[in-house]
Length: 257
Image 1 (cartoon, rainbow, N blue to C red):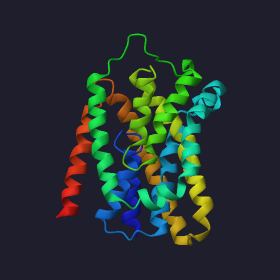
Image 2: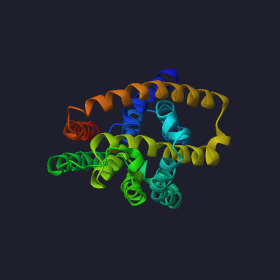
Image 3: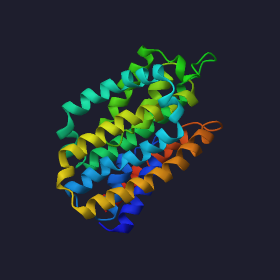
């Protein structure tokens, strides 16, 4: 890996983390297209770099985190399913799921279909929950159960939690914003666990690469978050579903050829 690779992967992470298109799938696909060796550091980097994008959420939503303890409890309740499953399946996720490009492309494709179907048939009620403060603990926990599906690379944590929010009775904007906030404990825990288990084996250069990736993803994610909040005011999620299907099909053909 070199500086260009790190910069490119940081941009990919920042753009894709909060869009319903799977940042993990895009990082893995980008790494394969760049022909990077599938080292332990690269796998750790693909997990840990998400911290940069998560810090962008903390920066933009700092008032929600530091001035609303009631909302924090609901975020914690939503985080529980992912925390339990993540701890139980850590080795499977990293050493099997991350290694299977076929699985990743399949989930990317099927996730696109699911996103389109859900958007076409879901009707938002007039009384859909619009305020994050009014989300109930059962609603939060249900959203967390949906997010836990994203343990499989390619599913998209953002897509799963957004659909979970809509299914639980939130409106589009509230679903997306809760997905942003829920990403913080989820990705902080994933990054912390990864660094705790493998960080001691990183070289000084690898820590430098990780730092560059975090900074790049942080600033890129701020732009992506603001763009998404504007985009969903006038567009549906169907375009994201179509995009997922196109990317999965094209990459699959490239690998076959």
